[in-house]
Length: 376
Image 1 (cartoon, rainbow, N blue to C red):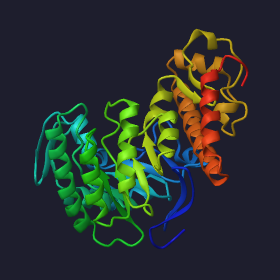
Image 2 (image 1 turned 180 degrees about the horizontal axis):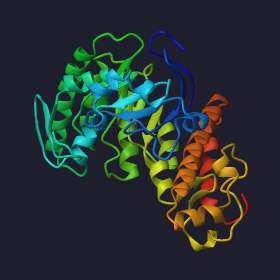
Image 3 (image 1 turned 45 degrees about the horizontal axis):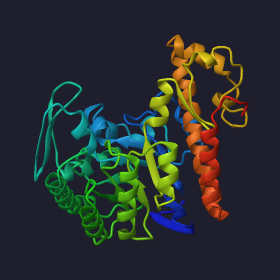
């Protein structure tokens, strides 16, 4: 642990980076996957279980928590860490993406965004300063600037307007954040799928000398090859000595390919959301546990895993639970998926440390392609 926010780049292997973020509440081993705890809970999981899978940090959401139970109430109750019993680092996103995707009515201008709550229809206003204030009330360790996220496809004109607005908001967020010892504010690179806008955004944010940098607007419907191309264009423009976070991504394959291009941090709802719908990610690819072929399969999802949900429960039982709509099915599959993601990240870190990331990536992809019909 460290009394200040520090990032140490320990080793590189091609584009892949092995590092460590040190903060007062703990150390984050990178590349890192952050389970999403949108409203103060990683869905269907106890946070002790989340920690046991290997997670060093979780994500919370400004938009959802400001609506309920409200940031002010969380602050009165001692902050988000104390409320949810997670003493380790928490990153909060700014709420910009949720305003775009969830609010039924929104009006955006230079001062911020006015929007209608998806919960009860009440009107709220979020400025860059208010976003940082909310994240401070939550007492999060890594706070994200407010940005305008544009869903793709979009016109270059709309993408440029949103990117420029996000840069101005980043300056205001930096001022509002001030000097918070041991904490960090990250900027967010925008620019959609327009290369020159991505470069301009990355260069402008780099000049602000922030603690870290996220790449946003790349989990909004674009093909994987577009995402990877934008990373290849963007990352060389960001400071080598600062952590790089790809927001909202993604599948295990997305993660592998993004690590290869230099990303250090990830978050995504996919492990828990997929688990609640009967889909498991495994060393041998995806398994839809709803399929009839699992009805009498007494194999576990992965007998080599250290996770009890992966190792100790048969596919037949998981199939029964999911088909019967029993909550336990979603709980066990979410637990398994989060464990698999963390095992993947540990394998990535070890491979970079040993200088064999390219081989690890090829072997992992080959195992996914083999499928799970044969014993694992």
